[in-house]
Image (cartoon, rainbow, N blue to C red; front, side):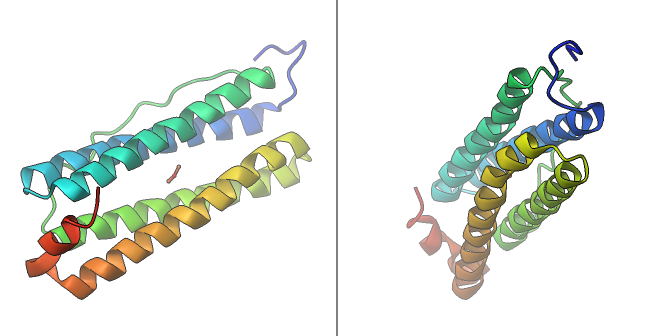
Length: 163
Ligand code: FEO
């Protein structure tokens, strides 16, 4: 961290580095989901998760840029290997919702930390993530609801509506 002009405390800096890891982790997981759906002959879901993976990359890089702006220091966390097989399309979509709920909890903790540290800049920056998570949890919930209504046997019909 460039101490001479840092506008961020070490605790917030570390927590944001951890969030970069979560966003890249989600990206990696969604690319793995895209690959799995491709293997299942469900190209609509594959494209959907490819796009989600790209979005998560952008979320991670947005934090990298923020740390640069406030004179912080970026340390990219190591990534575990993402899950590569699922019992069913429904189970795969459930994992998408669970991942987004987990990221949402992490974002809320970051907002709590920004408040505790009186880091108004981080607080303002994180509000974008709060609304983004609201949209993503709603999107994952909607997709899961539709998939459940179609059922595993007819999920291919839902696939054709995704691109
Ligand atoms: Fe950037 Fe969907 O978490």
